[in-house]
Image (tube, rainbow, N blue to C red):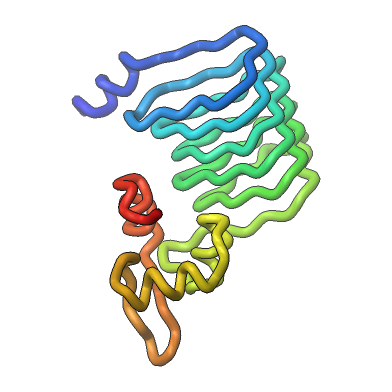
Length: 166
């Protein structure tokens, strides 16, 4: 319960036109009600309000979309598309909730708890050879099942967050 209270205290409500990169390492409640263009990397909750227009690649834990978004969306916990939302781009949610009336133009690839090497390469947007080099050298935590590598998504997330891969 203390974690929830702490998260509620960190609310950022943006009702402006912005461009650039917003990146949060600590959990926040970020709400965008205006226009944003660039890159969004959040922990905690990201809400795109009904009047918002966002052109961005988004990576977040819990992403709720009520407005217009164009770009790639990765939701590590859940992606929710509200009735008035319009999303144009590929989405990568761990869990997905699409409410009647929402519009999605793009492809959806669900995130799994365990990923193979190709999925990790797509997830991190790096080439497969780099993933194989990191796995074989022990830089990227994983385990072999037969001749195939398996990686736990949460472990990959925390490993990347610790900046151990360059």
